Length: 404
Image (cartoon, rainbow, N blue to C red; front, side, top):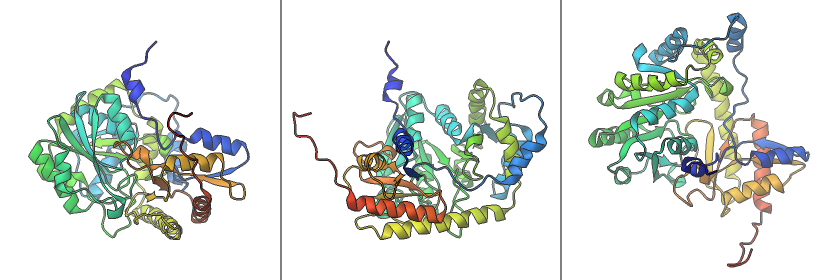
């Protein structure tokens, strides 16, 4: 029996597809430092666990399709604190940010439509688009410029008759870029000129290392009819397994359309929402402490990378990732070698190959994404393993044409 074309062309996750190699290395006795995935090791706030203990639930029933009212109110209060008043009709609770992105694309795109995204981008954008029959139109940003938004002319050149939206992640996964007001304004103007939606993935809002908070798409009233924000609690409170996020837009017709998709999947996670109510009540000092810890981690990784000959990277301004260009031709082959063959005192590390964060064939071949989600000493140890591996690496020679 044939599978669907959708199933055949769906891209594997660059973050997870090499996990079997890591599992094999661990089964053979190696210690593997996982820097391939954005799974924080900072403990989930005790108040969130306490909220579950106090819940006293006898029947774990369906929650409302758009979210538990108390959680929606907590989200409204959180965004109000960031300067954005959202009515109940402008907000839907989703199964994490992933479903919010899927809903956003499904609401604005038909099969065959396109979305413009600066690359490298969060790899699952490609997966969600493929699932919906939507094409990603990538526009290149470069490590040498700190992955700044490409010039307006390059963005505009990617806009065609089937383009429906421009998508930015701010702060950006995987690059750590925090876009400037000028960069946001460029996208706002393009959205207005070409009648496009502006989708902003803002799940890393609390992880910004500048003095000013990152800009939100909700802060541009001139595109209130076409601005869509997606968000998640996963990284903000170290609750990746809770699977709770939201979609917000002041275009109530758009939100009502997304609600039909929300009804089709029945309900978002009840327990995650109960935890979220408690998390959103935490004082700003919680986020300040967590942000400072990630700043230390970022600085440690950058210090170690700066000692490695041939490695190119720029300091990320937000999120908790750094994209690094390594002195190798094929970063995926290098990562496979790390897991299969290289050990330093019985240890190795896993990072995400950069090519999976691009839609352009061949792009990102020498890059990796490093998630600085471990404590500082573990990160320094992992970076020293990486340095030793780069010194030792000798790629296998390519097979001659016509040989196997």
